Length: 343
Image 1 (spheres, rainbow, N blue to C red):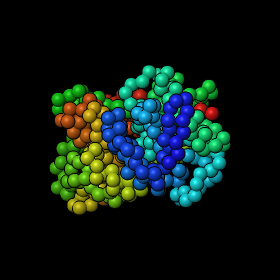
Image 2: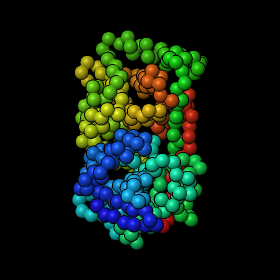
Image 3: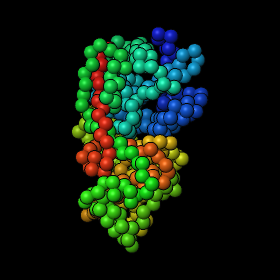
Image 4: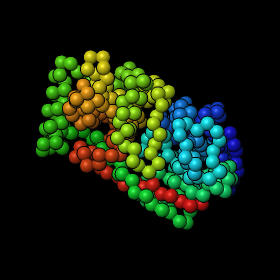
């Protein structure tokens, strides 16, 4: 743990592998409305398997926590496997949430004004540079919503295009209203596929708390297979280790849709619960030629929309990728960017 003071903002810089959980962290996370991905035991599990060091910064003023920033420290030397020794003397501070492209890597308590947010993030950048050294000359801010780039400190900002984020509002009283709202062939096909899968005698479909439906080992295998399809992104996210999934599925904040052929898991979605906007975190399934079923990808959205309606949620964050498919399901596509800022 390293502490820095910058612009009257106190920075507690933590390596989740070794540093203990900050006092009151879990209460702070929940009070700020942050998802389970920020739980400290999950950050620790990710950090031990990561290819680059992970740095959590807790920002405080007057002894009161006011925000947090999470980053991967991407050094100039290539590494293989997990890192075993310290960090590089130079590199990029990559602000991101491990395993989730639907969240920003920073947040604040309360609702500070935009200029105050900029001041807090400026203090973060200065404090991190003091801790890491002069070779760390750039911060990459991921998943910056449209209109928020002005809150990021720095004069020169390089915008890197990223996929839009799909958000589906769920104002309906039942799943049939959603089908009717979609209309045309999309609504009819979703209804038809769901009925066929329900009638499949060899298939069981479970929707509910993940800890009751799946193990961490099963979840990690399907997630890893799905991640292999998306390895061509800039700074691809490291594979999530099984201990991460062990903690994730054991949480009371994760909902699963699990498809089984007998005892064999052939499809799985994990969704991070939230009072208003749960996030669909991951999806994985076996191909039909490997024992899976057709149309499971579409069907899990049907199950989650039905769950969200019954649970009284405002909507679902469907995540990134396959934007046009998600638009066809009624989702709005919200633009965001990665922004590189030399410092």
